[in-house]
Length: 168
Image 1 (cartoon, rainbow, N blue to C red):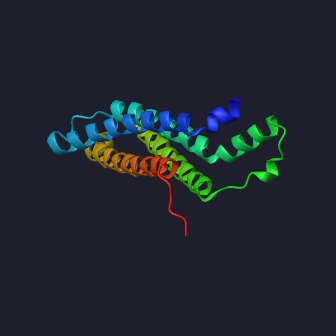
Image 2: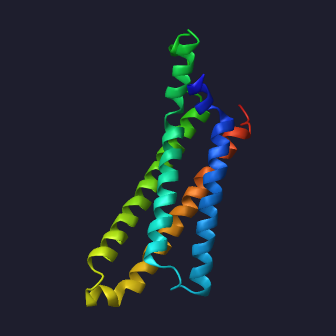
Image 3: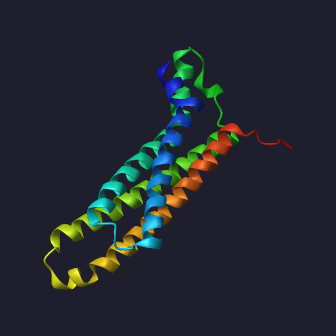
């Protein structure tokens, strides 16, 4: 029962809407700061927000990518042959978007780790201090673009799960 619950579209929708909302909120904050006051966001904000978004996207990517495994386990629990479960086009697309979200989440995590390392180890280095505002702005821009890509992927997942495709 638990694997089927985890693989259900309702649970996925709740998780996607939650992650989509937080990602959109942080992305809009970054974009508004980039327009009004580009230097208002600190390294600590980027690290904290990047960790949050990265972890959420990685978790969602794992859920989407492992949906077939969860459904096969649910079939076994009902004493059915899991060879009877063939991946539909939707399941293949969801697995693809799971991998995309994993890659985006891991990229954000890597960028945050680099930013955190630089801020921690070069905080007294005059060269780093002179380029820190530019370094922060480049990182914020890159993470914002990745969040927009993640938002697009999550909207695609919702469309795949809830809008029927026309069959030929």
